[in-house]
Image (cartoon, rainbow, N blue to C red; front, side, top):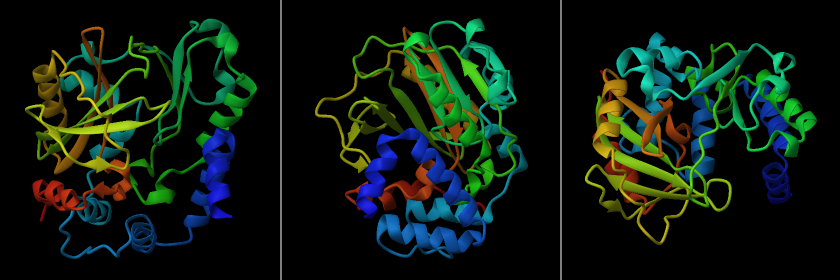
Length: 300
């Protein structure tokens, strides 16, 4: 029964969003630690050590429960973070912003180009990618956006950075890429302001693949939720500049993943993620959970 439900949720985005809404409302009755322990054990197969965490995932849970920085709420907001990027690195790394909406009713499709992306600012993965306005079922997409706007994403996995973000919808330029699988994400794992690992996601809407590299572009033999590709990713020609951007944005935080795009020889900021996979990401082999965790020095 559960497998059938999961398949339906994956296949139908609107059903998935309504499931998230119900889940977020139901989970509000439980406290943070209770949800974290229950979800951790379900996803990773063992109970987390929260007093003296060792693995990367355990330390992410510790940060969710024990660390707080009011500035981080702004940086998790996909609209307000733009000011931070502009201040720290310059607006040349920002994707073009077409508009900002308080609700779905404000979206005027006639005023938008044929290709664009709609993002809800207070969660993860709440995106509508439009490659051709005429080919999109907008009635369905608007219902999807309306449901996302009602979800308090914090409730699901207790990522407090999302709790107090005022939901908005932003519309950005669609970033195209010549590769069949679409544009790649370059995600820099930064520990106390120093990039240590680079996660590369590809073919996200076909057959999601994920490779991990060190900062010298040596591939790490680990699967992190998704499997590796057979071939290595081409090293970005501006990798050093991308690392400098990641350093500037991550400075002052015990851990943050800085997500960037590199397409047509230009670097674009994606987002800042303080709790990757909400701290429930499975490593294969499992020893890499501890290896990554060794880099994360928790604040006192």
